Image (cartoon, rainbow over all chains, first blue to last red; front, side, top):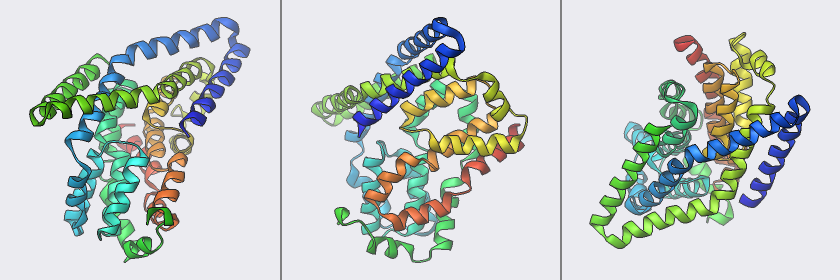
Length: 178
Length: 161
């Protein structure tokens, strides 16, 4: 999966290089490569620190603790806890979707789970440094402010549109998740 | 960039200190797990930065200006949202790409719509969601978040445009 992704990205980079060459010759391609290099050098310490921090968070906040916080949650408290848990939980989709399934199994309602997933997507704290580093303080600030209400809003909407959706989803879980 | 790096280094040191107080082996284990993760992702990171670097010189600036540059906020936001949903990979892959598009002249509203579109319409995430939680959850989650990226873009335009 990751290897395929890497190959696809390199191919895309080469294709973009060809476009750059057609537009401005080797000088343009050279500028792109220099840009790549300086991006890597400028963010090297940041990226190393981010990964060390991610590893440390994983040993500091055990998965069971998060499951406990969310498992019993419902209503506004559940939405709030779901949102905060989503914001704090580190790791990619292979990490948080299994946790969402664990919440579903422990009886969390659909609004809480949707809030959790959308908060992971929009509020996630671990992504903040890279977003600030690459997009700047202003864009990041506006982005977080504008999407601040979205996770609980999506949770409420899911709850309103699909009453009892938690059980329906639970009954339809993929066999691999059983 | 220097501030963000400093904040992260401080956070990492604080987290390491907290873990060390609990158990020194825990601190070492966590830091090593992070570095192992980094080693595993390094080829992907280099590839992503390569795309970002090339995108910066290959992106026809006029095209970005025309479609995302603020001439039409509706077009900006809609194209930004869809483009965001199509950008593949995690933040280390996609943010360099979004930053390149922003620097090429995409408006603030288009950029916010792009980040939000990437976060909630992400096609790459869909395969994980379908496989791990199933199509019923995907249906509910997609219905509840369908309007969020353009909403974020228009809100940005109205508040900060």
